[in-house]
Length: 367
Image 1 (cartoon, helix red, strand yellow):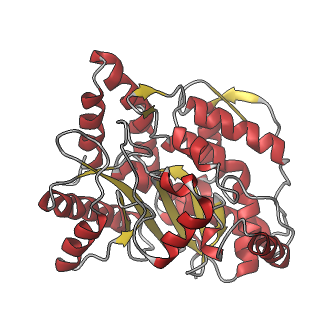
Image 2: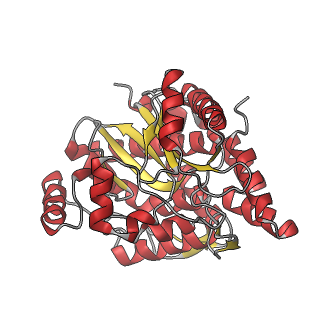
Image 3: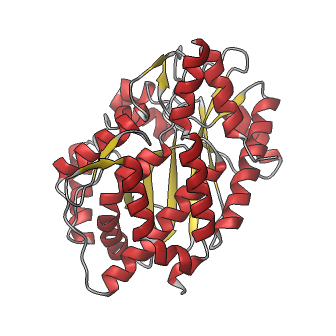
């Protein structure tokens, strides 16, 4: 296989809201049924207010980008047919009345065992899958990905407004998400056996009910022969999602080349990674971040440029460099979803303006 063109696929989670009030709307079953009529397999999420799309497996980022646009456009139309609106946003910007849990046996069991964690979920992220040959490779690649996770979070932050007010964070979703016992940055694992032993402990303790509840921000996929990166908010636009996918694949390619050369990943201490995560969630694209490699504080944008430089050979090999450079420049020029949400709220102090900005960005470029 040409390592520069490893397979890649994306899952995006969306919020369904009332088109008049912007409040979360429990209508995922109905929207999924409408999607099935047009040949789109839409997954139900934990709460009735959310749905998830899945792309096909791609080797070309351009083709992935096109399918992401088509999926957002089609699912938005399905939502509209059910008097709902589709939002690509990490958390509901309005005050939610409730998040009823989807009526499936697994989700009801999660609700029974985890109480308000399930009923207050309503968080939407994005998962990027990159093909790897086996579980051992997935674990070792995950170790190489760990130091870059905060930068990916900062880049995609899209949850600054919650319950009608500024949270003071660019990614409030990531702060709320870490309430789950298996969420956040994963430990450093020496081997796949080490990883499986940790998962077995969590299962035995009841902190997870099944392997799908391993919510770490990078993990060997439970369902596919991939490494799955789960750190980001749902990006505001399809261009930002495609940018994320291109960078994640390039990190995986770079990691595999390092492993082939006998270079193991640096065991970044959990405390350093935790500090880097907090800064990324707080600042997004603005302000400073923590470089997990040397623990130094640096501007977030410098850290992102460092990431792109690190994976430049992989981007060149895949033919993705021009797209990444252009999409990243576009992102820096106008800010990410969190930046634009705050600007929309501060302009007039109206939460409706935030909902409109999120709705506009959700379908930007999807015509």
